[in-house]
Image 1 (cartoon, helix red, strand yellow):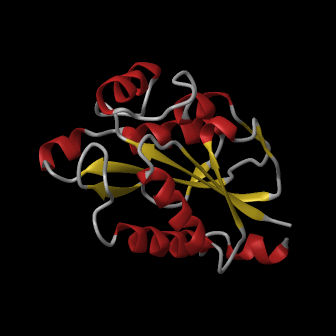
Image 2 (cartoon, helix red, strand yellow):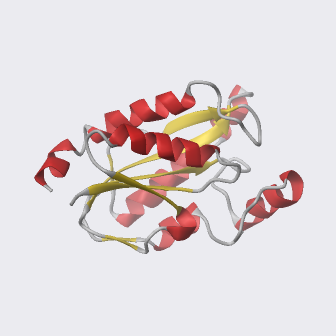
Length: 178
């Protein structure tokens, strides 16, 4: 059976909520599994017809061990292993299907437009996805949070579900064939 895989990293829960909403949007077309990067499979098999990845912006990019530690120290984030996250997973994952359809998202503070333009988590996610051999089927999507610890801005989960439905259109033929 074919499926989509949504892999996320979340520090305060907002990226996890977006990942779940994206999966809900996909579900009408293709079943979707949602998994934290720390628990994601090391190998993506041919049953996966779409890979979606996402996480928060930390210090203008993807979380790293030092920014995860900062989130724990400064904001009380509950992170079990600061050494492992989405960036580390994307650097080591093996994708068996060439040109696997993929997309990336991030969560970012919408409070300051200049800072939002400097945030590059999704851009880095896209670069790392390309290195796996995946094929980006849509531009990265950015979801807004109200502050460092969230919450998501009202309507963002609905936007994520809609984005999931849009992404599902890129895999409907492959999902039907499986």
